[in-house]
Image 1 (tube, one colour):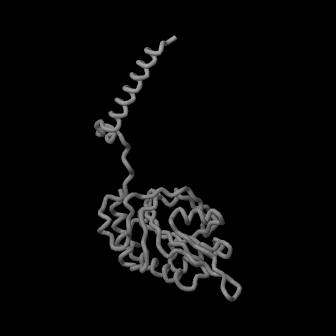
Image 2 (cartoon, helix red, strand yellow; image 1 turned 60 degrees about the vertical axis):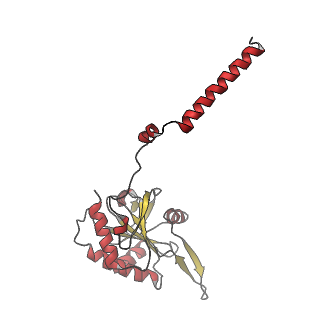
Image 3 (cartoon, one colour; image 1 turned 90 degrees about the horizontal axis):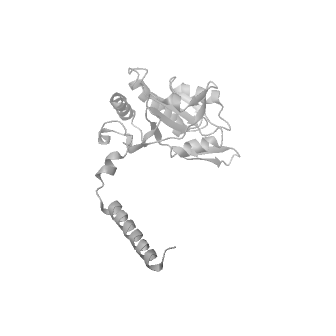
Length: 223
């Protein structure tokens, strides 16, 4: 059994060792640790200041997996959107002003990038925030009226709320005096990169020529 003197010596040695370790961690060279850190996935190799209207995030944000229901009734997963830049717009078919105006502006954008390679050409996705009234077929018919290439999809609650929130978008049902309801929703456009990450946002007012120029530049800058 250790006597009192031996125990005190062991405790002092242990304290000294811990102190030396702490000093090395806090004050020792950090270059080796930094060099071993994994590289962070970056966005497109371009200057965000060159964008006319797209606001690129410093780092793309991972989007949780999702599966939407397309206008033809088939599933649209996050993986199927990869490979191309995607502009996502949340709206609804009973919208009196913002939605038809925005989809009309996006149709002008789509016409300007029509000459790009279909494999890498940007795409527009319209997601209804009113699954109670908007069926997949109705949503698709509404979106295709503005441009036939627009993808259209719905998502039941509560998955829709989770999907919108993951992209920083909000919506809310608002009763009307006539006993019906309308939907208040975010008007910004969400930008997903070819890896399915949220890379940026486009805020109104929208200038179709500027949106088209930015998306064409992003498509050409992406390997």
